[in-house]
Length: 242
Image (tube, rainbow, N blue to C red; front, side):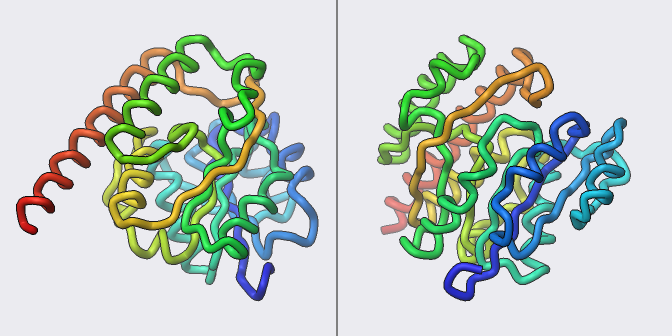
């Protein structure tokens, strides 16, 4: 706990057997009150390893998608009394050690959402991030900063923390079951004027790290544009009502 706030780390997992134990071992000890893994019908030994490590494990009985996995993660965390919820991919891309810093900004600095950004310290240039991902990230981030009136370094990191207040305010259960979920929740948080911040985070891309392919990246990019258009329409409607 931090200042008597319950910290729960959620691990949205799919075929993560190669990296799960290392990720788990690198989570700072005696920090999180609970760790919950949600398995999205993996075909490998992710569930077996998770249970051997003593992680509370929740299993989908069929593959539902990355967004659906997060819905279960956050529902379970709130059900278990979390005040701070940290989403950490168990695939080795992000540094588990930074979970303390994410939580501190929620509890001590009163943020509702904190993103572990790959671009605050420019580390993405040296992380083996595929070039098309780098270019798309920069374009979409600049576009959404313009639309949302923010100055975030990126909107597309998969390493993030939320306050209980944030997850109870937004309607995350109605978002997409796919990758665009990540962008929908940020749009909703911004739309509710909740406080959002960032910390720098190096990221490593290896063969064992999960990553959406070019086709799904295009689908995600189009989804982000759709989220942006919906935000604009909603914002304009609010102005008309005023």
